[in-house]
Image (cartoon, rainbow, N blue to C red; front, side, top):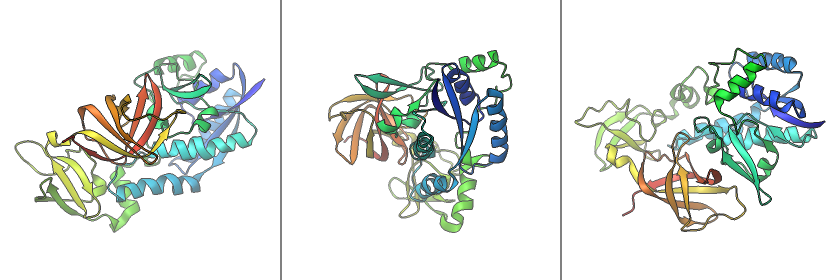
Length: 348
């Protein structure tokens, strides 16, 4: 029988993957230890689950690497006034990086995960596609992967809806998973971003001026790490119409605010493009582009492209484009590539 590795977490999705894969493979389970809160309890639960499934389980210690690669990036991004996406860094460098490499080192040809995405081969080229369930699609979070990583990954749930997943495992006697959705940012369990950064940065993030786009100071912020572009609450600035965060200037420790219409932009600039196709796009090509994981996506054209940067222009203005997040390009459901958002403007 063929063999395959499985990234296990103890949740409904990896459990469903195990049940599906066992029909065709000898499954070997692997659990990441990244120092997440409550890991000892999680490990105990996953060991028990693996025993029930008849799967061998190995725990892979990645705590040091996770701190250096993901946590330091997360903290440093806020220090620089950006809004990071730690899941994208983790997926590329840890889960589908070092973790996948360890699975490969055991001689297993591939590793399955519970992501709601599809992997398809087109003309001999492996592509990453949106999951069938639009409410659970996770392709945005995997847009920084490489084609080499995709070649060694499998996604058994990509053609399923979440409700189908629950019904499937319940039909196999696993009845206690509903209502146990995992937290988006695993290392923030039980705490907020601001609380976590307060503890990590200490006095490194000081109060500073709140200024309008014209440079007029009208208030004092409590530390830039407490704000993100598009935020309205917590500014404490009453006016005839609401104020919103329009930018964070880490060099001068200024929080820049404006009105809702000033949050709109049509041009987004990105750094370090990552392509999941053999031939990168060219200027003039059109795509659906998401500027955050919850964004529905909007039509945009490639204005400029080179090895280190990408510039896109949307057909319609987009709200609250945040440096540090990612612009992900799609073509008929396929992830074409991505770039880290560095700036946004409105076409003159």
